Image 1 (tube, helix red, strand yellow):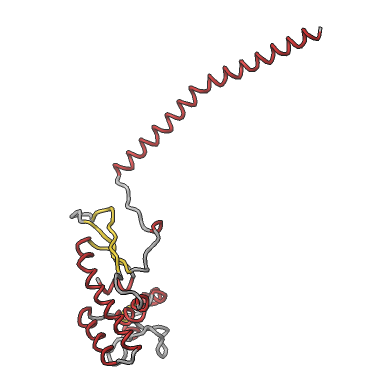
Image 2 (cartoon, helix red, strand yellow; image 1 turned 90 degrees about the horizontal axis):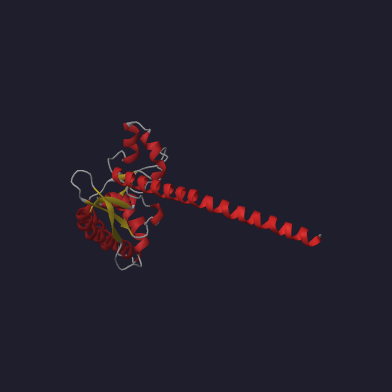
Length: 217
C-alpha cells in the first residue's frame, strides 16, 4: 500500500487501514528526506544506511512511467522483462532510456527519494493526510478513506461525489415534480387576475377617451 501511495500520490482504502498506514508512510518519507540531506552533506555512509532501512521496511518494486504506460501494455512479455531489468537481473532504477530502450523501469525507492522527498526537504513532518469518504464499501459497509501525500491534493470540485442511491433519486424526482406542479398551479391562478387587471385598464382608457370627447364638444 505504501508503494502504491508513492506511485500514484493517493490511495483509497478503509479508514482503519489508512490510519495504520499513515505513520508508516511518514517514517519512510522522513528516511528519504534524511537520505537527501546526508547526500548533500557528503555523508555517503549515512545516506546508504538510510536507503537500506527503506528497503528493509518497504522492499522495492519497479514502476512504469505514466507517459509510457500505454506503450508498455502493448509489449510482449520478453520486451517487458528487458524494459524492467538489466541482463544481470538487477532492476533499472531511474526510468531513463538505456541503449535501444525508449524507457526503463523506475524503482519505488528512487521515486520516493528523488521525487516525493524532494518536495518535503523543508517540511518537519505531516507529509500525508486522511480524508474520510461519505460512501461505504459494498459488502461489509466499512468506512472508506483516501490517504494522500500533501501537495497532491485534488481540488474539491475534482473529487468524485458519492453516487446517489435509487431511493434518493426517486425522492429527488418526486420533489422536483412537486415544485414544477406548484409553479404551474400558481401561474394558472394568477392568470385570471392578470386578465381582469388588463380589462380594467382597457375600460378606464375607454372612459378617459369618452370624457375627452365630451369636453371637446
